[in-house]
Image (cartoon, rainbow, N blue to C red; front, side, top):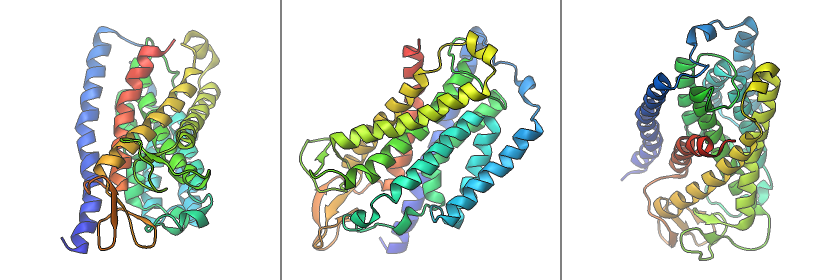
Amino acid sequence: MTKMEKEQSRVLVPVLISACAIPISMLFWIVNVVYSTFHPDSDNHFEEHLVISPWRWLAVVAVPTFMALWGFRKKSLDITGAIFGFFVGFILTLTSYVHLACLFTFFVTSSKATKFRAHKKRKLEADYKEGGQRNWIQVLCNGGMATQLALLYLLDVGCGEHPVDFDKYYRSSWLSIGILGAFACCNGDTWASEIATVIGSSDPFLITTGKRVPRGTNGGVSWVGLLVSALGGLTVGLFYYFTVLYTVDSAVLQLAAPQWPVILAGCFGGLLGSVVDSILGATLQYSGINENGLVVERPGKRVRYICGRQILDNHSVNLLSSVIVAFTLPKLANLFWP
């Protein structure tokens, strides 16, 4: 396989995963619609949410534009990432400000985490990219699943904020927790990979075998990393919680289920996402160490094998992890929500 063919396959896999996630998302949505037919909830009034206020239209244009320009100026996004990121921000802001809060929290904190102790990461990773600049593929892998769920939210619920209550607002709660889960997963994994790898002194252990591996190895975890990933998800849940309190009418909140568990849901989503990402990375993503002591993702001359098979790359693993957590977290939240 030529170098160009390898690059094309690296781009094609995330796109195929996103394409497969669409019918699965639609299937879950159809199940929700059938469920709500026999158990009507109070957000089954789509017509009431078709009217979009001028303030929301202003936010829909202004906030994603600001985020895209800020990311491009700070070199967190390249031009393709900024354009695709604007589209993601447009959809999420249009549907609900709580979805925007999840995106904003992930984007800002993960960008800061990527630049944390960059000089140390340069010594660990052969493919290290200065500034962590994201292109459209990376934006797709981190925000694609959340955007799909937001489009279903727009189709089913309309525009507006709702409290998380699986009895009164089942469909909006399911979709919003799925969006929270997708971003909590991505944020938790980013914090773990960007922060935990450059703090502490001990090498991580491979999640599938417990064997010590070099830092930067796909599937390598540490107790500090797991804690950091939970904190990354918790941060997303915390901003979701405060946005719900600020944007949803207090009279509605008083009649709804308690909202504080959304913080715990974000925390668990970050931890679960990091674990799932590590399992996929240890098994479906190649890791080796070259003659310079740097971790590489492709076999080659003088590269010592560590773990995994060359099936997925890092982008595909991130996307697949967010898909799994986005489908899993709403079900778990529905079971344990007080």
